[in-house]
Image (cartoon, rainbow, N blue to C red):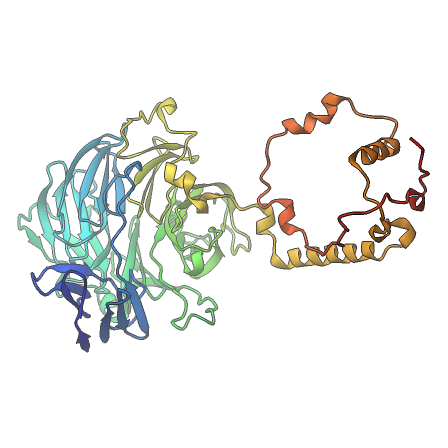
Length: 566
């Protein structure tokens, strides 16, 4: 590896490729941590060089990547935010009626669900490392967080006291996801991440040690497990566990035996010619349809995952594991970041990287076999101006909780009505709709250009527009080739008519029946319609004949009108 130090405006820094950090050589502080997967870098880092003139870090892996170093913009003072940094996850605690959210700055905040009131916070939960995931134990009394420092921590989140620290066996690789499960009265904490292993910690109330180590790995995990970083884990009672990795592989495990039940692979999309690295096949979110998964012989889809190019995929796990349906909800093919379903699997909520939330009716979807069409779209709204990092349904209260990279945590009705943003000055009563922000929407969502609805004209296919333009040109050509006696040749005009003469001639040619003055003015009271785009945007431009500035009175006999004397 070759490392070439370069000067920045305030300090000398260099890049240590394997640890992906930028250091200040004068005071030995870590200024920046570059995460390969977050930056879209694939392969092992072999060399790097900082280009000071354009403030770009050039990194060589399987390909050459450029990382632009910029200061994160501060939130505008008039905008309501829940955290000072992007929110990476949030959860609802039904035991205490709290909402807990975590930010990239390793800050944990606790909010009152019913009113949105801020209750408490504690900082530095994982030191300087970012929190990546959180969950609660079955009682709801303990909070479990995972971080980029490779550790899991168990908290009494009301007091901010760390009860346990769960370490990995070997290197401290990043923890990407965690979950709390119960199997036949045994309780476990399961974590997955960049070590490509399934780390299972037995939650024993009689183990008073502060540091815990994971249970021995399953043999199938060591031999036939994932070959790339594991991004997500989901559990379905009583004994099914699903994990997904960066290379698009999904593995279904039997938690009792530790054996692999089946493997699923994301279909490879056709790569773009400009994409030398190939398409992104990573699967970062999994959701079980638990009422269907309970029927082991069912041919219906019982697992939902996100997929490449912003797709949502329905999988059948039994009677032949296979893909049953795939569709793209996002109009911009934005990556799907979160999927939640109702308890009885009748409705699915899907969120993407543009901040949109889509609601689908999946009650009868993919029940009997493959589906060619997407499920019925019930509702769509924009919840955030940036990627949604977490969705959670609180069905008892009929609300939806969401968090985003835009530093906000928000509450919505299940129909998409805006209740409020945690951190706003006005409190709400979640049980009284009159206290909600609805029918208002968040200010930044309203003002963001991407929130504009797609107009029918803009949504038309380009080929259709081209055909319409060809038809318009044909009509114009036909009109231009009309017979001379049917048109007025402007070139024969000799005298320029006065305004009085023009007005008189118009009245002579007008029909006998005229509209009343109030009828003429009816159109002036019509509401303004911007058109999106206006009609004149689609008109063709043609040259017009040049009319002499001074002319004589036209000979109206050419068009069959005799001139009357004054």
